[in-house]
Image 1 (cartoon, rainbow, N blue to C red):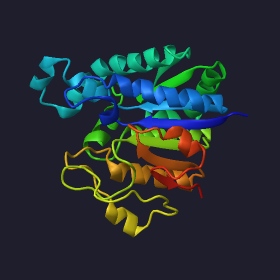
Image 2: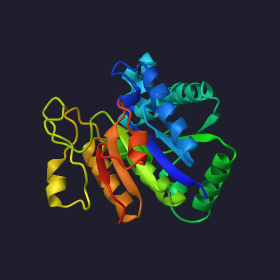
Image 3: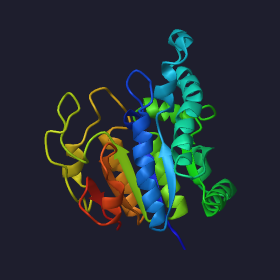
Length: 260
């Protein structure tokens, strides 16, 4: 039975602040995923970036006062842009990838969860890579969670990993791992290499980025904690560095949260 690897990539790793895509980053991450697949892993990509990519594409969005509605529309505009970049990057390596829109409820309990898991397993058995993103257009709850600093695709990555009984989940972001940051969002300490348990000292160490991004380090640590408690090893690492294969080789890269 193939091992399942979840790769979650944050918005700022994929999209520039002005809304254009970091296309080289897509190719860089895909190159690592190709090598992971060669090692026997089935890979699921959880992608962020749709809202950020879409906000700059529709000038009329600025006139919408309802923040939830504005960002849901932006996500609808940005989703095909981001997913197309993933599909093209995988196609250049001879791999078929496709968009799979889901909500948190799809990986909860009951028939919907069973159907979602079965679909993804069959999808990967066909040799395809699912590119999962929260279906913001029909999930106002998810967008409210984003705005209220509860995290979005980080939490979705946990739900998918747990439902699929993944071996590992790698959360790729724009810093080297769990570290202290200054007011500009830059690390001012070396990353903590291993977190065996998320205690009060670890929680006191993290805070969200100064720009208020709800899916900052606090969200990732919370999700990593949930993953390790669910028996899944989690890693937080820098998307801009060659990290996926070294992590799979057991090297100390970024911050590792060993499974309990």
